Length: 278
Image 1: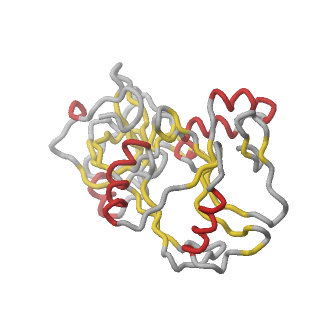
Image 2 (image 1 turned 45 degrees about the vertical axis):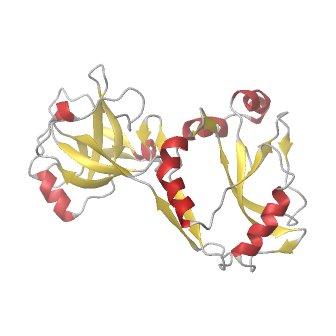
Image 3 (image 1 turned 90 degrees about the horizontal axis):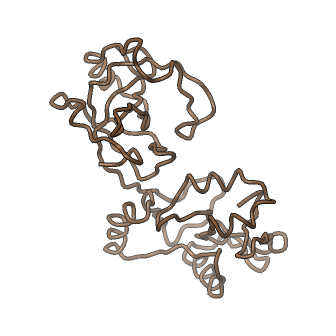
């Protein structure tokens, strides 16, 4: 997608229908080898429209619709979600690529199967749960996002804040070639977590391979630099992460679970492609 357009299989922009006659909520996605690829989507978003035709064949994108807010000029926002979904399914009955309809289920067993299987199989982050009787409220979240997280062991390669009172951990893992690389950052630590880590962390010294500053855009934040306190990469912690990976790193904040005093750097899996390699 570029400037509000989705391109069809011939590289032509699919324009909006007439103003306010049809409004659909959805998301642009790209699948590579059957998995969602945020990296590929980012590359498409920064590509000039003049190159869109070539990229359609090389990196095709799809628009996955999950709600309809207006149809045939009628405002549907005050209708129940179940009514809007019925309207959306009617609209989608004759769709073709790149337009797709998001799957839904009211079966708890099927939802559990999706939650267990699809994060690994397709790279989705989890499920969105909506009430069948809910109305659309602009600017408000009337649904719940349930993310599937798995736990991983990582090294503390650096922290934001003082070493004896770290605020955020910059997590690292070694590659098979012995290079220590950044793989993500935690959400802010609690006071207890900070005190636990601060008691065991040691300064990294001049030979530490990481830079003196890190930019938050590496993990989806604004392009701002923060001083990095480098530490010896010998402390292992367990973190929880979702399936969102960008440029080999976890895109969203990791959740600190515990300090693994019984483990050393040799116990942390090396990576060959992405942070989640085990």
